[in-house]
Image 1 (tube, helix red, strand yellow):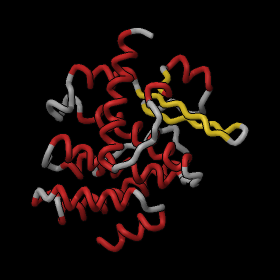
Image 2 (tube, rainbow, N blue to C red):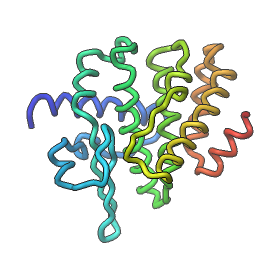
Image 3 (tube, rainbow, N blue to C red):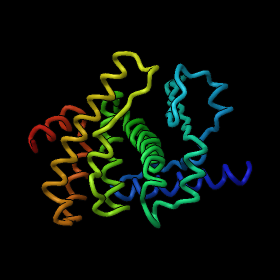
Length: 216
């Protein structure tokens, strides 16, 4: 393993530890062992090849996982550490990395509990995770919700069902983030924010959508 891949995996491992600490969960898995590079992903021949991708395969009752995150994004985060400063240089790549780690942790926890997870639930939680992580790392970022959800471009190779799923996840996460802003972030009530998002994390999809509707 070359040094670049070692650094990339250690960065994702730090994100994993941070996300698990945020939600007070534990996968007992080292994300490093599941990270693959572009060559390895190509050998798996996925239907799509986005910059972040969690690949799943079920065999003999066991779930196999592999996580790909664009090497250029990881290299940029190494140069511009979001823990030191989250800004225009690293914002998009930080969100990309958070999304990948979010998918990995959420699927791992669900698999351990033998709980099925829909793709919409997975994407919705990742969109929420990006908002919460950006707020906790960067503080009160101007127009954070707009930057995350307001000007979204979907990949051209998505089919209609996939596009609708991503659009729904984006819209519902934006509504939830707006509620979090109203109740917590503008008043810097971090304790209340953490309690809310931890409850939300443990809900299934119908309850998540119900909670978003309740908060308005």
